[in-house]
Length: 222
Image 1 (spheres, rainbow, N blue to C red):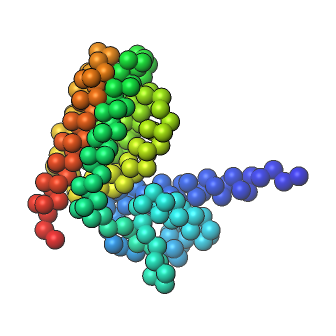
Image 2: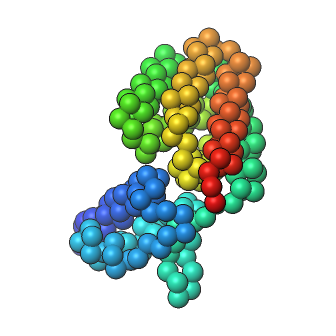
Image 3: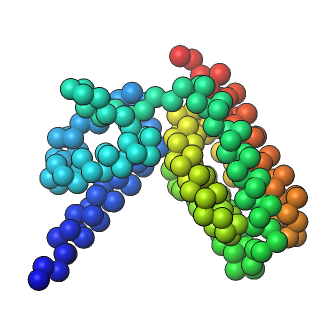
């Protein structure tokens, strides 16, 4: 009987390729509208077509790229309307998560959240935008996991990947420290086990982030 290790190796390779390509998109190496050529990726990473195609399908499902008949795969352009529609929805979800998490959060979880803030600070000092986004995502994911609502977590995850891309596309580098530090009041509210305050701080964090992204988008030339 086959042990399935070949399939496992291919799945791991697919995941690795997806994460590497995602990092390059988030870092701006692949710009919005730019084509990602399968043959170039195959040559660069020394892999066959199958895992590359599967990784690109994953990125398309996450809405980072789009595929077009006879034109290949391109990094998705995100409209200002999508940006405007997304932030209030996510802000509402974050408020629900904060309210639900605060009464049940443990000291161990609070320590994990503090670690993520420190990791964001370190990445900011290093100018590593991708790492900031990774730890930002994990901070919020921990809060949603603590809220213990599977549907809420699934809906948030469906939006968060796109929002990570929006942060990069709008080049919110000048406000990176401000965004990182805006996680601190969330942690303080959770430490107090104050549901209303935690929900308020979660919402404020996202609404502030959205306003900053709009400001940066407006300031950038077309």
